[in-house]
Image (cartoon, rainbow, N blue to C red; front, side, top):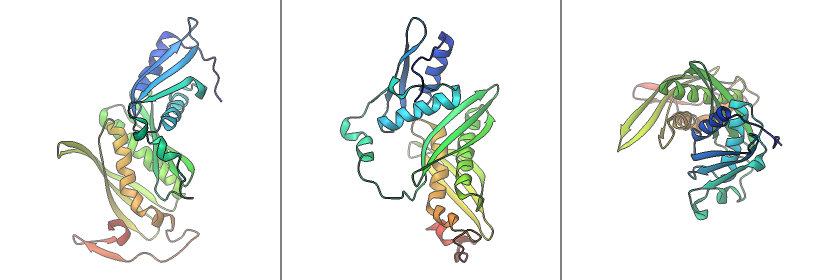
Length: 254
């Protein structure tokens, strides 16, 4: 548990609020301090994108990763704009399968230094938390690229060398009056070369959508990547089929 005696200067408090207001799912955030500058409460209004408990964990992780602040979770209050019936925390309390076969994006956090920004991606996989990071130039496109590549870094930690991921492209497109993030990936293993594409709607956070697009591309074939020839499970390469004149693995197009 973090300390409840953290003291912040006015500039430091504003930096904390600025960081939290950039987090995915945060509508607004405010830090209450005593006259001596000690943190009394961190108030967060959530859009309801995450459950209140997950949003609180995201806040706690962001403060530790980006500002090295170990805050007592009891000081963080999250209020969701969604009604109780719509709060995803209701679903999270229901019994879950023993293993979630999809890789989930828990959070994307940023740490800025000069003209560079480092994205920290936190993924959930079969009850485990896996983190990856990537540094890029601090521009709007640079932040999206950093988010996508940090997600790829975390994925490569999960597959433990059984496959390598290359981000061939990342773009946003306007269609049906919505903005969509689209990624193209190439995945290499000992006997496979697979091209994947994924997309995600840009809701409030284009960086979050970039990371989600990477997972959208990978999740269909992720179990096959874990069972790539040369791993402990072994096996033969999957059959290939032709799509637009190019041979591709069936699992990548199913």
